[in-house]
Image (tube, rainbow, N blue to C red; front, top):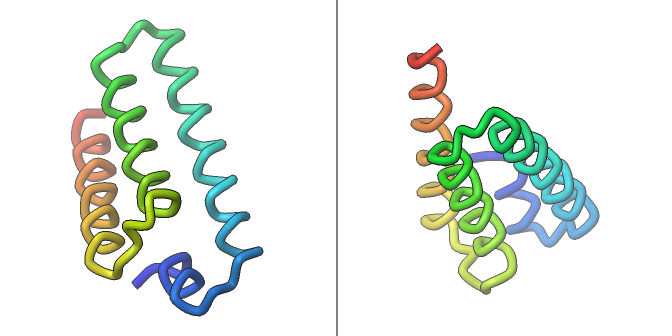
Length: 85
């Protein structure tokens, strides 16, 4: 289980907020890079992933199962990205 999942379960708000901010920075940088290269299909996928990530924290959907599901999604996405290089 990821450190951020443990932080949410333990109620460590400062750590959670920092992790969310770093993730949003990465989503934004990735989205800007894709938009600049006019890779719109990938851009849409990144924006969908960002929405799911944010929904986990701000839509009161946080459960260990939802967190695990998103973790698996990002792992598969990372593997697919490396394969396509």
